[in-house]
Length: 229
Image 1: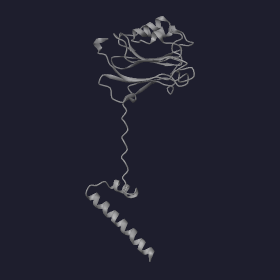
Image 2: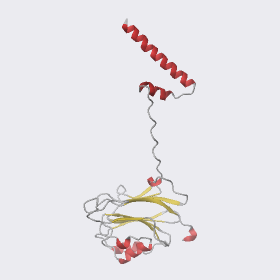
Image 3: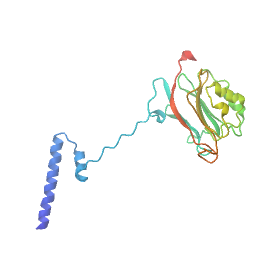
Image 4: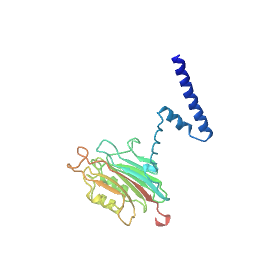
């Protein structure tokens, strides 16, 4: 007898529930929300906040027209390689197997954004003359993207530092052993580049044993008019 009464009660609840859903559906209500409410004790689950949208190279906002989106990340100690992203394309990374100890540099056409050349220069045991040969013949308007890895400075001489200064750097003249450095400059720039960060190697503030923390920098680089080159 009690089982029959309980069965009738369950049937009545189900009937009322489906009647409610049917009526709500006919009136344009959200049936899914009602189902969730039925199975969660009458409390509707909060709507999850939408994830912030990411743009090219992970930027939080899109770049204006005729601008290049970029993100530079210096290497972490001598373990994790640097990364250079341009217009949502990874130019340099450990995954691409094209990083090297020292200075990782990408040259880009400042008018159309075309990648011209990518190369790494060992500034601990390498020959600085290779870097000089790379930087001396740059054409007016060429963009220069630089990300350090391990040691960017031991082999730098006065001419190499001066060439980076002519590209808009303010940190190159003081860059030292195992500093972290990211920089975007341009051949023929009239003022100092706004895109540069340096973290000095210091025992008192280093994040890693013997190395400072990795640096990350992003932004939008305006393309040049062909008449400016």
